[in-house]
Image (cartoon, rainbow over all chains, first blue to last red; front, side, top):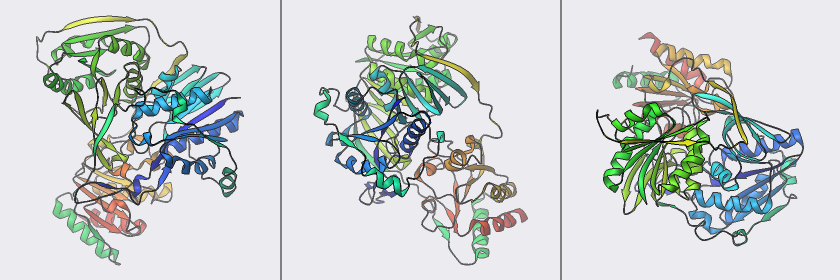
Length: 259
Length: 311
């Protein structure tokens, strides 16, 4: 029975981030954290595999101290145990640091037969942690997968890559990154939410992962993040009479010369 | 650190990257080379500006399997910058090469410049809500989205050297089969002049008819959000607009029942006129719209279709 691990990221909900119009800085004061949208597909896929084949699903995350808040949420989605590394270093970590930390953690808590990741995180969307992890752990990477199965010791995965599809067979363990279309994540039931509180979680200390300073030094440093602002006319009709609204819109489209 | 290298499994993209590479070559005063799997392209890559072309020759047809060889080569050459075509295959390979090279990797770099012994790049964050400027230490690997740069202009008779590396070691744990080209049906929405886009405000597949009738009255193409294509499968995937889907630039884009998540809006930014119809006055799509109507799409859209159809 397979041992399955899913990596996920606790991210700011981008829908709650506002752009300050005067200086284009981002206002995250009202933004809540969430499990990355695409990570939910990876978690669901792990749980689906375990439901079919037996075996176990663990999850692993690296973030700031805030990641602790994610544990109940992630465990309510079906995994049995959560491992987390909560360290201020995560604030400035680039994908090379994140992959190094996750790889070191996996060496400690593994081995796993399959390690699932999302195709990318919802905030950074770097799309590189999964293939970096595979290379660091010296196992094959199977990225951008939209159909996955496990048979005995073999991973079978279908990929869709712009202009073609292909099926990969991998002997032994693999890191697999999944596309959102692979499944539709379930909404946790009340029972699952309550059960999550009783499931185990374990903190891994960064200092116990035996990573040297070089591995923990980001190679990419953010100089600025500026909101992308579109200058649009924002003429929105809200009258009760839709006949009036439609007439105004048709006149405007005619004036713009697009109709 | 020295040498600027380019790799893409797609030679058209490699030639686009030569435009970026030639700029870096001038700023950094470094030679510019291209790593390719296609020996037949060596001459035209030199014509387009490569000082060197290295052809990887091996029995394996799966481009990703050359990551190991490219990593080794990049280390041996003490590569300073490696630009990789940002296809999904390219992104997979770039991450593995970045580990071999113990290098930074920037995904989907939109602009690249050399600055004080490092690079400065910009890319999108938070699903397109923000633009992030980053300082990237060398060695650096960057993936660059296809069509981000124009192809470098070829100059007949440019000089450059070509060499071949035989690659014989491949990961025996992986086998690839059932490779099928995807046959695209219908039109390419990225070149459409008018677009009617549907979102989850449409409550069932049969109701797409409302949008189709509007599209017909306007002479527009139908497009959709990621959810409609990937969760509901109501429309083919090549019709979904967004940061990870198609980016469109029509004269007019009309959305029906689209809430306007940032990932979607990132795909419609270059539209000339954006029109939104949705029942939720607070939907973010209205902030991105030039014109809009707050109302029940089932009431508003048929009226709009009738009005536009009359003209």
